[in-house]
Image 1 (cartoon, rainbow, N blue to C red):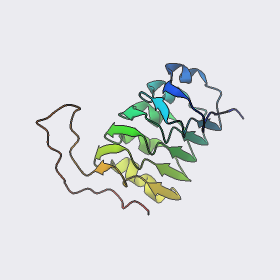
Image 2: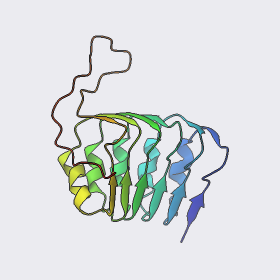
Image 3: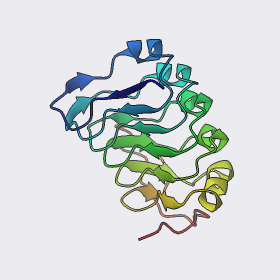
Image 4: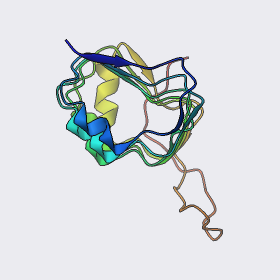
Length: 162
């Protein structure tokens, strides 16, 4: 059982693409609560297919879109990506996970509708915190696109738990 826990430190800068070389990680990949952690979630995160328990990169300044490669993970317990600066749509590929404990995407800047495949997780996880603090149900605008005015549209996203 291999794990990497670097949460609650003062790590700064971006997660390096070399995170994909930690292929033997099977239990934990914890980088949460590092307020100086910036950049994007590297696409190489999808190479960690042995990681089955816990991925946390919450309470950071990780930004931009979720990589579709995140759906390649075999995570079965908990995904913490809350309280960051992630933008864009929730990727359909998240729905491929078999999460049981929790999906935490709250307090980002995610927009659009929650894909049906991801909504299906709301019935299998014990704790579903996706909508609160996001812009779900609004049109996603490209960064710097001043002609795109976010407008509210009906969302079929499940109600987030309090």
